[in-house]
Image (cartoon, rainbow, N blue to C red):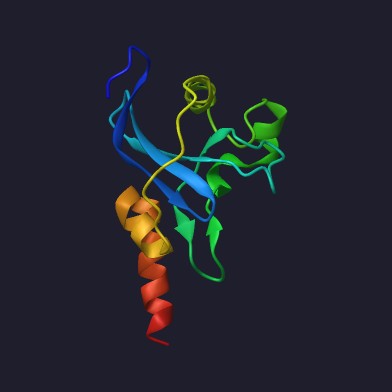
Length: 132
């Protein structure tokens, strides 16, 4: 699905741990995953936020580390990382995207679907710990 905006949807929507997940392709060609926030930690229920996969070690969590820093908070970009991603988040919210019909129970499968360097690293790290 193409838009006249600064991104293109890639793949299908997924649902994992009560959150919808989708991928967009940015103008620079990079794939950026977004999830629809539950609001439990962010206080932003229903807002589409960028993330880098599901961290598996030491426990399961949506990897938002790159997007949450004090300096970003001071710029009004906390949880977004960049102005471009904040604008995409706003547009995704305005599109009123229906809930995903495909539910995935495995964090590793979600990471494989996202197929970003960071999500695949999460799977690799988990595999290393599985062998211990």
